[in-house]
Every structure is written in structure tokens, then in C-alpha cells.
Image (cartoon, rainbow, N blue to C red; front, side):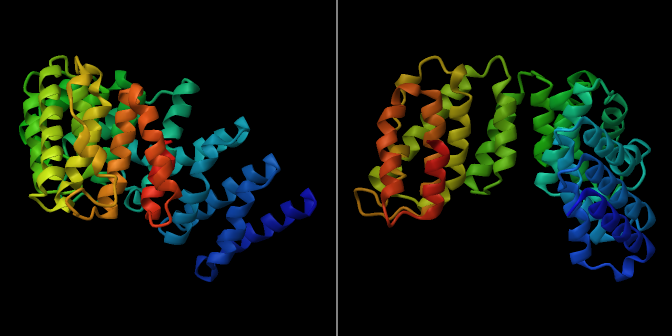
Amino acid sequence: EKLIVRRAALQCLSQIVNTNARNITPIMMELLSSRLRDRSVSIRTFAIKSLSNALDRFPYNELFMKTWLDSVLPLISDPENSVQMETLNTIENHIINPLMSNKECKFLEIMTKSHFDFMRNVFSFCKQKAISLEKISKALTKRVLNPTANDPSITSIWKLVAILSGIEKSHFNASKFYDNWSDYQSMPPEYFTILANLGFKDQDIIIDCLKLITNQTDRNTKDYQLIHSLIKLMGVQENATEALTETISVYCSQFKDFVENGNTDVNLLITKIFAFGEFISISSKVANFDDFDFTGIQLLISNSLPNGTVIPEEVRAISVITLGKLCLAKKGISRNFAAAFANLLSSKTTDYTVKSNCLVVL
């Protein structure tokens, strides 16, 4: 339809939405949010304002909130600067300003991983436009370091602080976070990510991180985010070479022992395989990478071991990713594995998760 018709229809729908939230249906919200993808800049801008006005009028309507998160946040990457600025304005009104004022922000309770990825784009846009992030950084830091009991938003706030610490390090004091290290075993993954982003170094960090990682792998917790954060923090330490070398060597021996003897349940290795890949990804600190025997992990992408033990698809899938990290760290072996990955892709019996990971690696 012509621009004038689309604009009139949007104005009519906006009036209906703002009149009575009880009569709003998901289809009507989809029609409103679809205008956020309109080819006209003025229509997209007007749709942002309309949805934001509806939120102001009905602030705790979950349908409005979810539609706003799913439809408005992505527009921070819109090619038009005017749309980006309008998007930033409504994000400031509904998320950033309430957080800076220590007010309740219901959005944090329903945000998903993709929403936090968009918030990363929001903060990056602010930095690009020289919009200060100091107040929001300090406000959120205060909330995570001095949490109130039963705060339903604390997990989301940790995530926002982790994002901000990776974008604007100057607004954070790493020592204040490290003051809580005595409670490191109960800290969320974002705590370790923050310290890593700020480049904090201490001689006790490596030993404590290895203890926590070992605890996770021995119990096969599959807490991948925590393990990633711990190993990322280890990677910024100056004295990590010896510990990394020894850990990678031990893992190689354990995987080789398993494929030769099959003396444990292969499913219990899943978390350890993931951790091994993460250690490999920071292996630039390891002096001589050629000294390790990677035979064990190489065989774990197969359908079965030489002794007949069938390898579960989940184990094979995560082993493929780990081998991909190995190829990136040791580029000389990439060609050797290309044929193996291609063979997995061409096999009719290979599970789709294994094939998908092969595509990612290639």
C-alpha cells in the first residue's frame, strides 16, 4: 500500500491499542510490530513511538513488553540514524533510566539471551556516539556488589554488568569485584567474565579456577557458561603457561585412556570435552603445542571406538566443536580434519547435531 495508507492504518491501530489493552490480541500486536520493519523511515519511527506509548499506558502488560523486546531492541542496528536514536530514546526510558534510578524494571525478568545480545549493541552504539555509560555502569555495579534479598532481576543485572565491562572498562574498578573472591564458588559466571574483561590478575586465581573447573567436569554439570568464564579469566593471567600445559596434557591422557580401555561412561566426559576445547582456545600461552597427543579426542567424533563402544551423538557433536577449536589453535592439522568433517557431513547415519557442528567448524 502507499505510504499515506500505511500511516493512516498505523495511526488507527495505535489509537485502538492505547485505548484498551484488554481487547488487544497477539495478531494486533503483530500488525503493530510489523510496521517496525516498514521500508519507510517515518513509519518505523512512528511505530516505535506507538509501541512505547502503549507501554507507558499499560506498563505491566506482558504482551506489550515481549513485543517491545522482540521488535524494538533490534532496531538499534537500523541503517538509519534517526531510527537508531528513537530506539535508544525508548530504551533509555524503559530500561536504562529506571536502572540508574534503582527502580523496578520488569523487562529484566523476561529478557532472553537474544535480548541481552541486542543490549550489547545498544551499549556499543552509545560508546560510538560518545554517550556516557558511566552512570548506568556505576548504578548496576552497586546493585550486584550490594544485592538486596530476593532481587528477581539480579541475574539479568549481572549479565548487563558483564556486557558493559567488555565495552567500557574505564567505568569499573576490578579490585572491588575481586574483594568478593572469597565467595567465588557461589558467584555467577558473569563475575568471572567481568574480572576477565577488566584484565584482573592475581596469583590465586589460576589455582581456584582450576579447582572449580575440576569440580564441574567431575560432576559433568554441563554448566558451559561458567566453565567458559573461568577459563577466560585464566587466559588473562600472566603465570598461566605451566598450569595450562599440565591441564591440557592431563586431559589428553584421560581421553586416550578412555578410547583404549573404555573404563568410564562416555556421557560423563561431555563437560570435560567442552572444557578441553576452551583450554585449547587460549593455548597461545602454551609453549610447545606439538608435544600433546590428541588421538583420544580425535576418535570421539567417530560412530564407535575400536573396542566397539558406541559414541553418543551429544558426545560426538561437542567433540567436533572441540576439534574445531584445536584446528584454529594448530592450523597445521586443519587439512587433516577437513576430510573427516566432510565424511561426517556426507554420511546418512550422522545425526543432524553432529552435521550442524561440522558446518560451523568448516
